[in-house]
Amino acid sequence: MSVVLRLITVLSVVFLLSFESFAKNLKIDAFYGEFQGSGVSENRDSIYFGVTVRDFGVAIRPVDRGFKVEWTTVIRRGGNPNKPKIKQKTQKFIFKPTAQKNIFRSPNSPDYMSGQPFAWARVHRNTLHIYLLSIDANGIYSMQTYARTLTPMGMDFVFTRLRDGEPVRSIKGKLIKYKK
Image 1: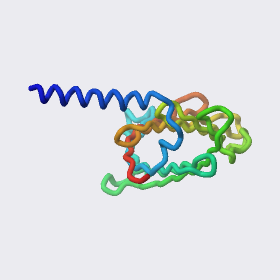
Image 2: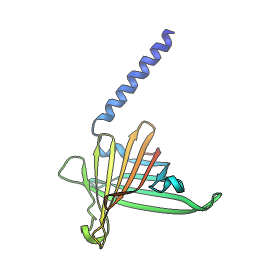
Image 3: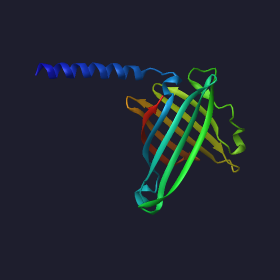
Image 4: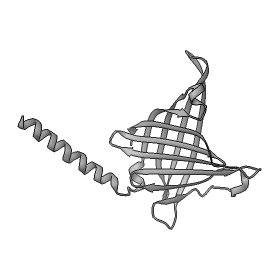
């Protein structure tokens, strides 16, 4: 029985030490690597029409004094359940540091009213948050947020999209780091 108690004690200490390291703000290089995983997308109609499963890939790499994020989403929905329609979308952004610690801005961000996304990122504790704000020709805004939280196994992922303050979609998933 004492061996079991020692094992529980050792595992508890390891868990607490690893948890404490995640409580501090990590540096951006902690997020570098390539991750793959999947998740579930929901919207307000999901109760009637179900949810969609999505596969994700994300690569975060250093670029000059900043970093580059490239992510791909594969969406399967509609059609024959054995052969659903597949849609793939890839986005790429480069972020450079700002004067504020752990806050980054995309140097390619356009004018706010162009309809193209204005992008920025921040690191808070063990989460890399990426924000995309776009305003259409009618003045209606769309805000997308991507929260990528490092875990011992890889990364938890939460995406939310608001359109003019109303929730449009949320996605939760898990990714595994497979390459540094």
